[in-house]
Length: 475
Image (cartoon, rainbow, N blue to C red; front, side, top):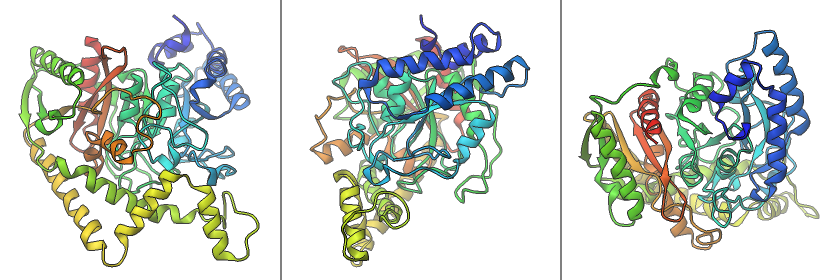
């Protein structure tokens, strides 16, 4: 087994015990990044900075004053800003943008002595379910390179699964951490909305976006969440809620917990192998003392429609700032200001981003606002109420993440509606602002990873980690 195969919990013991150095680990990851460049998991790599940072952390370890995540080598999804580094959002329109400041999560991770090795590839402006819409090209799945890595945090998932970094940050607007985690066979957690600061996250849909980690173990997810969680006065949507030590939820049993299986998530369209896999996991939980009950989330069928109205409406507003005037790519040979706006946006945005901007502008326009946007917000309230009713009865929900395992590159890219339906089991979590965790659960008959999802009530990340850790240890 190579060092880069290990999770952070295992690596930290070796680093702190002086068996290996952080510099050695970074060098190994950089070798892997070069060797596996065809995966296209990274948009930019910080080789010089990462080596210097690793040497600095080795000195701190020798002096016994290293931070909580000393030696954690992280990839950063390329919509989270890092001072002095490019942040492209996978888009041509930001291909020349260098951030002048750090996101709050970057500051927290730096203080904990993490090493940033590069910016990971992603669907353009996080709009996609396959990481094929990036201006930097499609990400390939390390398990099968003819398959997608999932989206929009596909580069982060592929980087972790491909042993190119220890863990990575992603963002989740409608499943963009959980779905690629499932497709690539890694752990991914989408925290409660407001649990992790969004300051420095370039927004797709502000009421839905949330930053979270992708990693190799539940233990790692708990350790990273400990550092990045908490209130931030720089983020107006940050929740002023006390934080917890999430590692205290690990190594517990599940006796007495009530776990719900929402019947709407197990209907037609779900791959039989995925259904059987998750039913087997539910049986394991039942055998271990948890109570398994069927529950109903009756408004689930409206979630995709509501999500793609609300998300695109917010995207239309958020992406208005990218016009070539202040930063990013500006069109050349224009005659006036309006032509500069039009040409810069036409040349700078890809087809999927344009599609969503146009849809969002339409549903917000005069005469259609009430028919679409206001109605979608009412549906969102009903979906949230469904979850509230269910969580009065159960501790968490066990569900699939996607209807299928990773599909082939190019299979759905020309059929937007089919692509959107890939998110059917994940978008409700974002609409309701809930936490969710993706956990690897074996493979299908083609050897492709299967993932399961645990959903909880707001700020119940600890309980989700408890159940996920128990299931992980059964593998």
